Every structure is written in C-alpha cells, then in structure tokens.
Length: 255
Ligand SMILES: NC(=O)c1ccc[n+]([C@@H]2O[C@H](COP(=O)([O-])OP(=O)(O)OC[C@H]3O[C@@H](n4cnc5c(N)ncnc54)[C@H](OP(=O)(O)O)[C@@H]3O)[C@@H](O)[C@H]2O)c1
Image (tube, protein in one colour):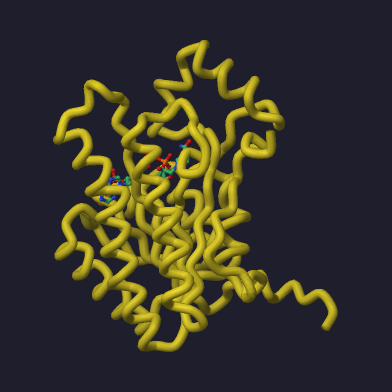
C-alpha cells in the first residue's frame, strides 16, 4: 500500500476536547477542526468556549460548547451525554483539562493535593470512562490524554503534579490493553509549553534558563507544537499504535 494522506484526515469525525477554553486544549480543538473534525469543547469558562466556537465555525466545522467542571463526575457524565447526543457519536476524546499547584512537600495541604488529583486524575478517569463505555458499545474510538514529560522524568514541576501525570500515563497503558482492539488509548507528553498554567513561573529568569538550557531544541514550546502529535494519535494514521505516551518535549527526555 502506498502513502495515503487521507489517513491523517478527520473529515466527518466528531471530537470531544476537555480543557478547550485556553492553552494546549484550545490549540488541539482548533487543530482537529483544521483537519476536518467537528468539535465539542468542555471547560468551565463559557465565554472562552463561545469565542473558540466562532473560530471553529470559521474553519467550516461544527462546534458545541459544553460548560462543565470535570472534578464533578456527575457533571462530567451529563456533559458526555450531551456531547455524544450532538452527533450521535464521539470518535475522538482528548483529555487536556488539568491544573498545577506550586507547593511542594513538606508544605502540601490536603486541599492542594485534592485539587490536583481531583482535576487531573479523577476528572480525566471518569470522563474517559463515560466516553469509553459509549465508544466500546459503538465499536470504535481513539482517546488521547495530555499527560506530561513530568509523568516520565523528574522536572521542575510540583511533586503532586508529577505524581498525577504519572498516574495518567499508567492509566493510558492499562486502558489501552483493556479496551483493545476496539478503542485505542494513547497520551501525549508535552515538555515545557508557555500557557497560563506556567507563564508566571517561566517569567522567572532562572526558571526560563533552566528550561531552555535543558531542552536540546533550545526553546519553550507553544500550544501549537503539541497539535501534530494529537492529530496523529487521533487519526487512522496511528491505527497500530495504542498504549503509548508520545513525548513532545524538544528532546528533553533524549538526554
Ligand atoms: N503548559 C505546559 O507546559 C504543560 C506541559 C505538560 C502538560 N501540560 C498539560 O496540558 C494540559 C493543558 O494545560 P495548559 O498548559 O494548556 O494550561 P491552561 O492554559 O491553564 O489550560 C487548562 C485548561 O484546563 C481547563 N480546566 C482546568 N480545571 C478544570 C476543571 N475543573 N473542569 C474543566 N476544565 C478545567 C481550563 O479551563 P477552565 O479554567 O475554563 O475550566 C483550561 O481550558 C493540562 O493537562 C496540563 O497539565 C501542560
């Protein structure tokens, strides 16, 4: 079989993206729309979702705003029900909602720990379970979770954040095995990407120097840098790939 560019084409597919209101999730929502997908977006900030909707529609694709807090499993389940009912299917789920709290042991409070794990792990787990159940019944789907370089190696990120991302990496592998061959489950692991999650931290000259000197490609990433890996894992081009954590880290983990 020759090279078939249509294997990257998502025309006619429906994607659900969490964390779509800004940063990496927003760039992914626009990237999936650019290669043909209709997009439903989950986040808490409704104004940002409706602004994104205007941009997705300008690309000629459909958009559904589904405001929800992923920390609440019941809200997650009704958001998934709404998003699934929109087109009668979801072909692609991208879990990008996530938070970091910059306190480290021995000073981490229970509230800080719970915020990180309730959002990054519990929220992602139950959202994935709700969509995955429907994908299994429908006979197919692709799930991509935005984990992190910090889920594989120790970085400057907070310890609670690193632990939560490692949980997502192993969740990805375990679900990939459980749900094969019907649903593929993968993750992307960005290195340092400038977004509202870390721009204040990166504005500290010592932190910026630490990142750029440690990154072979010599710069901080952009949200758009993450999009290609997600499109690949979401599309038929990756039909024989499951259970992987594809690092998009400027070469950080290579040395
Ligand atoms: N930036 C990096 O260097 C980097 C590196 C590796 C991995 N990541 C991961 O990439 C993902 C996106 O992060 P980002 O850097 O783009 O951060 P960001 O700009 O702060 O965006 C975070 C997104 O998550 C959503 N979110 C947070 N809590 C939520 C909740 N309880 N319910 C629903 N949505 C929620 C936010 O929407 P609302 O506030 O509107 O709800 C927003 O859309 C995260 O999982 C992060 O851990 C980031």
